[in-house]
Length: 128
Length: 247
Image 1 (spheres, chains in turn yellow, cyan):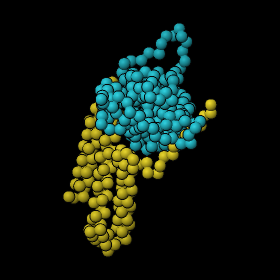
Image 2 (cartoon, one colour):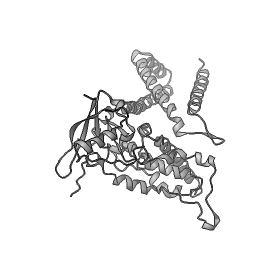
Image 3 (cartoon, chains in turn orange, cyan):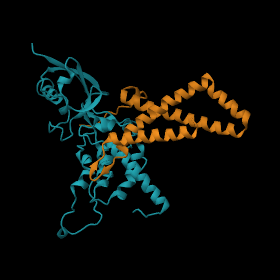
């Protein structure tokens, strides 16, 4: 009797086959938009360094319908990225206090509290 | 006429088939039957040539993992009543070569498992006369969930990285390495790091998280791998700042 194992190839569309894979790929895709927004901030710094006129032009571009739409898309992806990441933190950073594991909801909640606190500090710093 | 349920089973005979094909069976439907009972019914009454692995019938041995309607599950842990009125499609576990019918070739996993040294490597060997290596319940709690793995390989079938990169050490083996790294009696973390912290080890994992979702024993391999990533990064940084200091 001969062994002749059959090897199945993973199709390129594997990530479309299950909802959990699709959600994972969306999470991976969010990093692209987070990266693009970071690039936008760098462009803003460059324009600021080029003087008042350049900076005003940059602000005008941000306020245009296309600029607002881009920022909204980035915001949606950034929120999805953050929420899914926070949901995973109890796995990556489990806490044990006095031999008792800290419930995951406390670890996730702490991240939201820090997020809110940092956001408030940034808003106050921006004079809003 | 008593109620029945339809099964579509992937068949492959290496001596006669060039590729797998699907075969349909109709088996009696019983509320208390699991899929393994249905497969045993086929084997005993309809088709003695059907091959599949099983042993304990109680989710302990880890032998009867298969794709059930495209989800990796233990067939002894999957009730027919959850599929009543439908067709159950049964295939061998994804991401492994098919030996025959529902039997997979798991040699690669055995190699990966042994490569992570899944056993206690004491910090300091002591003679038998010195007694046991003691451990408190608290120290046991730190890694207890990772001891529950039954090597059923559902996590390998769920993980797309295992399918895309055949060299990936994979969830179960890495979770077991983590189990020993966390053990207060163990000193083998550096010995395991060569495999565990390599590109084919933890860094091949992109945190899809499917391994933990399908685990029938709530081992949570995804958590083990992410924790190992943090630990390996800290060790790498320590080594960079003070070479050899953390060893």
